[in-house]
Length: 185
Image 1 (tube, rainbow, N blue to C red):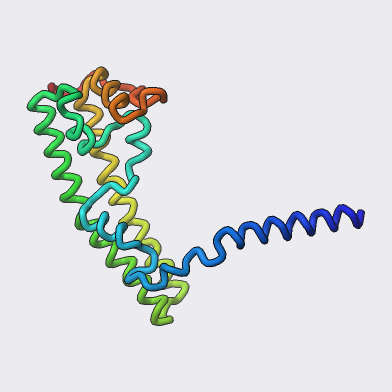
Image 2: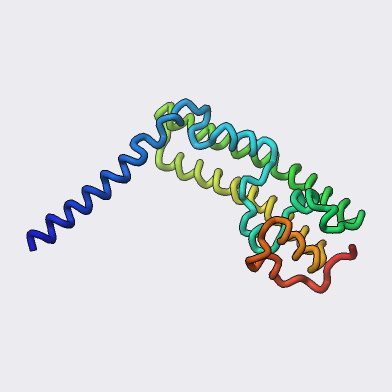
């Protein structure tokens, strides 16, 4: 029995020693950030309305993003109507995402300031996190809904080609139920 305790203690010590040796101060360079929870790149992406991986659930399951569809417009053989609609979708994403990104930056800055000023309370924390979560959900929805719209606009052949062009051909990308009542191309 004592041997088991000794072995368990050694195993635990090795595990803890290894994890702390790999990254003893993982946040050391982040204390100088203007907003601790956001990197400069994340702030730039939010201000520009970029996707930041928010639509991966759509993208990796056969619902292409308008920006990437436009990037591959020639290879996909987009019609002028499809191209114009994708450009509309892109403009709509930006119109929604940029203000939401700015709002999220401001909310994170307020939360950061409350912690920095030592004025945060449990109730204030709950309120701030609910506000941030709501904005994050709206931002993600802005990106995801345009993936839905883009998929409806493409033919099954274009969806398959898109998957190939993006390197998803081996998976189930593009295998979602393509709606029969899709809009005219």
